[in-house]
Image (cartoon, rainbow over all chains, first blue to last red; front, side, top):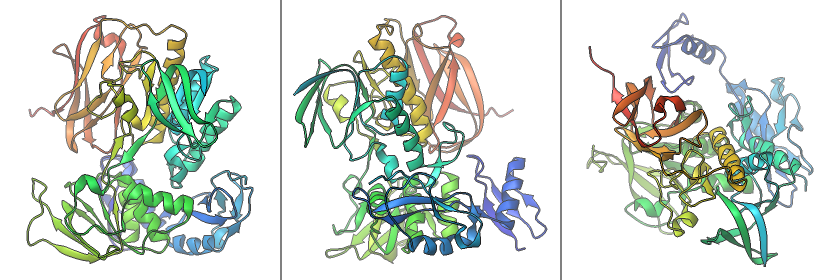
Length: 116
Length: 422
């Protein structure tokens, strides 16, 4: 584990956090900063949102998201997987677009109703 | 064609939909939403990112999921709407004139109106960047529309001016789709975006943020070829000798949003310092039965707050239509004091007000260790300590009615005061 400097995103304070090699956090004003910094250094995750092509009359693309946060290092692999998909209408919110994307155990789902 | 409606809502985005649902639930059944775009949902149609709904629905949604929750509710209630319909005028008699392809020119005789037309982006014309006028200089929101609804990536090598949230979110979005985002320049010494977006949209993708910098020149014969950024001095003027040149094909502008309040301005209604209408605690403008809410009133950072405000306007319109919202002569004026940009509302009719009156405002600059002080007729009635307060996050503070001790007229000043040094 290397040392890292982070900006805390838990509240508007935006504390400048420092995490040392032993996972000790300094610069935080509250305990939420410690939890955030430890998670961000050991297993950072993100929700990926993007669009996929669709044969709709009204829209050229359908918005999608990973149903839960995925490991940050998988973001571009997931984008490549999303890029391969062509959808057909109708699509409903929550429809699974890709099951278990890139072996993360997490589905990519539609986030818009596109009926025709 | 002339039709009649009890309530006409101008704009079918999050504000208009939430106001319509609230008005319906308060007893108004004759409602028409007039929407300029091809879908209900307004700007949220292009907001495919997440972070919406934490307050309103207690779960994290994308913008498209968020507005769908609202349209599902309005469909359940059978609320009537027109799409691709542009309102051209509001008459003194509360007639709303709109036009569309199918119906031509329509006059709606309304008994009450809710203005919820949203805001527009400040564009290149507003800042007059020196240099050429090539294609490829566009607002961040327009690029977001092209990307997320039409499926076009507007450029491959991008620079962004302004660190507002839309610009930051587009920095991430275009990076994900394979563009190279070279940097973001912000003229102020602090970022105008949320910390979460600085971290997850810039740092995640290694995009540098140049604070206290602006774009000082653009070059391009037909399409943008390169830009120059410079550091600025305290007067926000470029400093000679600090220039850096970037070759790029796109310059996105994320330099501010302005309430699209033209229709109410045409009626000559007074405005507040937010550039939206002057409203009271019920979101009623100075014209009886005309209400305003959402980004057309003041620009919000959270759609959840827009919905909360629109519900107030929707309920108030119902009260007005039921003759339960009388005007009183005695009013409390609400004024922004030191360090505060604007307030909503601008006035409080205490006889009509509910037990807690939400006062919303933005501070002018980031401030650490300070108090928000409410002074009523010269006397401090409320003081709240803030460790940090920033312009990019709107403050909402419910003021208990009893703090006014029954006094129905006077002046309430909201100001930022430094922490006393002992």
